[in-house]
View 1 (tube, rainbow, N blue to C red):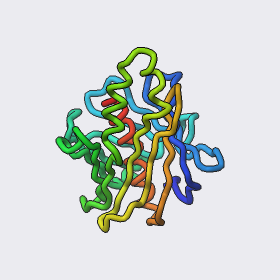
View 2: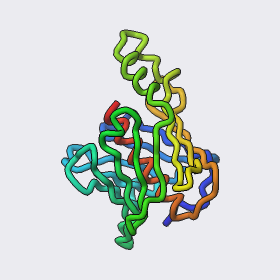
View 3: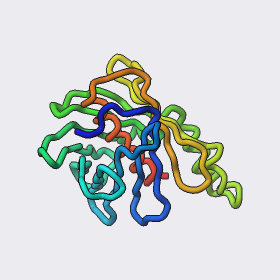
View 4: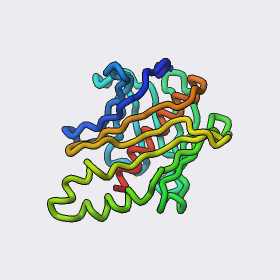
Length: 201
């Protein structure tokens, strides 16, 4: 695994010059830690996470376990070893109002829950975004945030969208220390979550 000793906050920045949903993950020093690309025209969601934007070495694969669906789960694997790190699963009906995902280890044990902090932000973003002219500026003042809690209800990470007119940027902060393997699993789960929520507006 490469994603260790990460310097927070991390920035997730979408590229606006590609047809696919590509984004880079950089640390506090500006060093690229990973480059994520969602494969287009797939009946099942599929994401590859590369070591850098050169896209030579695939560090992780994230693949849907069933046809695209509100209740799909996504396996996170390390292709070099074939090891499954765990899964992230969207909580179907509950996510219609407040985006909710659960993170499991490779034994199927639930470790963390991702929830949207304030679902009203997404609702207003969808509404105001349809308005002429004004809708162009929603990226400056309507920015969702997400938190990851452990099974003891402690907040481990907070991910927030940062103001931006063109493209999308997110900032990830770690609030408490957790083992490297769980840290990697959380970061990869958030990558998948961002792509899914972006696709749903």
